[in-house]
Every structure is written in structure tokens, then in C-alpha cells.
Length: 380
Image 1 (tube, one colour):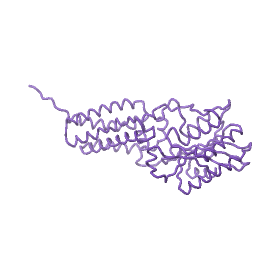
Image 2 (tube, rainbow, N blue to C red):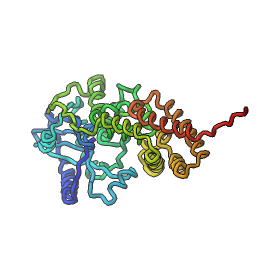
Image 3 (cartoon, rainbow, N blue to C red):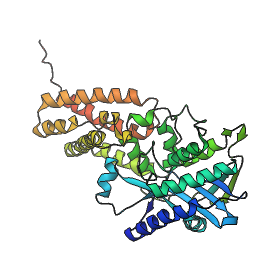
Image 4 (tube, one colour):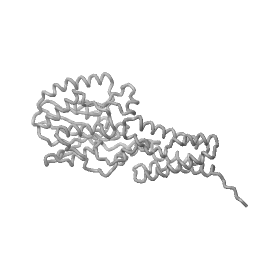
């Protein structure tokens, strides 16, 4: 799922080569020694490389062909880039690299690369080769990026299945896990990325993962796939191997997170409560806005607004006015939503990462409730 950032000049060159090269490629008849394979690239420590990458390699020494087709490119200079990405309108597209250039880039990044040769007859290798080049020339390789439904891995799965004439490559393992559970380990050693994605993703990522959407998933499922009673990818060959480099950050860890929580609880002042609840309320409004604004379905129906509740902004208003009646009502209401939130979280992967925030909010709200509750006069 690695993305390639391209300048305008580079894009022009890429499209020029893709367009005219495709017509040249259509006239190439692959030899009997030609191979086609799926390339799986390991994860990196940058945010764009946390999930790895998938590509297709076509190699035919007889015809001097050794090319890698990559469906993970986009133009960083696209007008309103951030808005388009948030909206879900950002266009991705395929590019083709000489194999040596492709492998040099991953060598430079110290990222592992594995290769799985597809066990298919020559006529299907030819068909896949032509489908890839037709895709580049026709514009079919342009697609609107969707985190789960359309990315560099799903596009590779689709074009291989199209070539084979049926849905041969399907999900065979981890079908009892949710998308959220599968994604969660990828953020190890990237704590705040894990926290951020945990609270911005909605119900879609809690569905059972019945679709191959990550490079490592495709790699595992290919090894289990049969085509005409034969293994489709009988062997995995490691081209590059690097031991994973752990991200080294003094602040991007659970420890800084817990220290901040501890400081908040220890400080425990009115000004802190107002700042804390204001931030949570604003985040809640942002989550709701993104759920309606964005075409990324992963952001819709976000039950995390039960924790980041926009009504906390109203609570802050009455708290500043010292209106105990409404402070009490809104505090009780938010405690109730936190209880519902906790019930929803019980079987979710991100329960423990948001639990400190939930408990801190509950602690502050209980304090406000007790302070604002009307005392009942005693009758002697």
C-alpha cells in the first residue's frame, strides 16, 4: 500500500512511457521462459509504508522484458490534495518500473521483498501481460482510492482474477477476524497512529474481513490458492530480506500517553476540565462531519463519538457559567453514553488503548455530578 509521489514532469514521462510503451508491449509475444509473479514488499516505518506494498512482475529474458506494474501511485501536487484525500476523491493510478529500479528503491529503504511466481500456462501469462498494458493505456488503471475496498493489493487481485476468468483468489484465512483486528498489529511501535486510527474508524472496520486488502494477506492466501487442481503460487522466494527496524521515539509510545493521563488526573482543575471536554467535543464534531463528508466508508457510523461527545461543548458552556442544574444533567447524560460505549467496546481490538481516556472522562464527569447534585434538605 506504499504510494509514490510524482512531480508533474515525472507524471508526464510516466504517462508517455505507459501510453506508447503499451502499444509496443502489445506486439510482444512472451516466450516459453516468461514468468509472471506477485511481488510483496515489507512494511516500513513511514506512515505511507506501514502496510507494505503489492505489485506484479513480468519477466522474459528472451524479449528483454523485466517490468514491475505498480498500482500505488498518486500525484502529490494534485490541487486540494488533502481535501481530496479526506473526501475520498483522490485518484491513484498504475505505473510500470524497470525491475532493477524497483528493487533498488526497496534496497535503499531496507524493506524486504518476496516473490511468488504464478503457475499458469503461457497463454494466460500473455493475457495478463496484455491486460496490464491495456489498463495503463486505456486509463482503467486510474481508480479512486478506498482504504479497504480499492488499493494496490485489491487492484492486483482483480486483474489476476480477470485474467484467470473467475474469482480464483479469495480470502481463505483470518475470515473470523475483523478488519480492525487485522490492522491493529501494523501500528505496533507507532502508538499515536494506532490511537488515531482507533478513534476515527467507524463500524465498517469492525466487520469480518472477508476481502483481501493487505499485501501480506495476499501473500498468505496465494500460497493456499488452487488453480485447476494445482497450487497457483507454489513457492515463495525472498529477493530481499531485512530485519524490521523498530521505530525509535521517546514520545510516540504508550508511556507518554499514560504520563499525560496521569498529569491530567493529578491536576484536576476547573480550567483543565473545560479544556479537556472542549477538545473531546470538537473531536466529536470532526468525526461526525467526516462521517457525512467523506466517501471513505471506514469513517462513517463512528460510535467513538460516544466518548468524544459533542454535547461536552454544551457542558463546558454551562460549566463556565456555573449552572449546576445543567452541569448535572449533561454530566449524567455523558456518563450514560460512556457506559454504552464501554459495552460496544467489550469485544473490539481498541478497547484497552482508549480505556484510559474513557476512565479519565468518567472520573471528571463523576466529580462534576457530585459537585452539582442538589442536596436534599433534612427535615427535623
